[in-house]
Amino acid sequence: MGTIPDVWPASEQVCDGADDDADGRIDEGIGCYIDIYRARWTNRHDNGDFYYAREPGFPPYWNCDSGGCGLQGPTFTVYAEPGVPGTIPLHLLFDTLEVDHLVTSDPAEVEGRVAQGAWYLGTLGHVYPADHVGRTDAVPLVRLHNRDVHTWLFTVIPREQLPQAFVSTDVPSVCCLAFPTAPPAP
Image 1 (tube, rainbow, N blue to C red):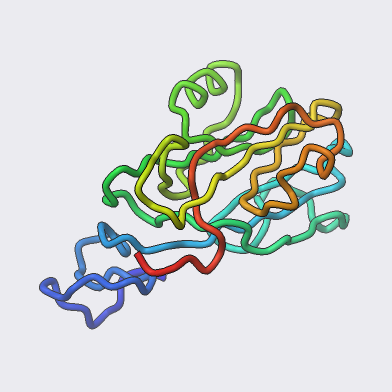
Image 2 (tube, rainbow, N blue to C red; image 1 turned 90 degrees about the vertical axis):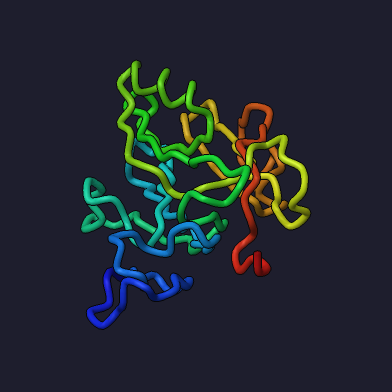
């Protein structure tokens, strides 16, 4: 992905993972979707840390050579770039106290967790706030927290949203609105 060598500055941007109009930005402002992949590491303090990323793979600080890393595939979809009216950033953090990754669309949560030592890893994409109305194809991105092993799970998959599916979980809450994988056209 990146800039295609034979693009023209006057070219129209299309959803293709490239900088079609040669302005240094990829797929900006046109409502392109991107899948968010989930991976799991079962060796890290036995808590089953989940990691979320725009591409399949694992964070560089996981030692996957020892085994225990598993890619669970794309689990939800977001807008790739800002510019879609009503959307907000979806942030990725690594909580050093719970030793787990989590996502949030709440700037106050980002600020509070970073102040407590969490690492800010960037923006995964853009989503609608949980109270957004208007997009009937956007679904709740539910956050579940297993308080026994301090693991966060984020999903749009209904069968994963049940507290009993994620043992010893706190009451599930809605982080924001995202899309199932392979969403309909904007």
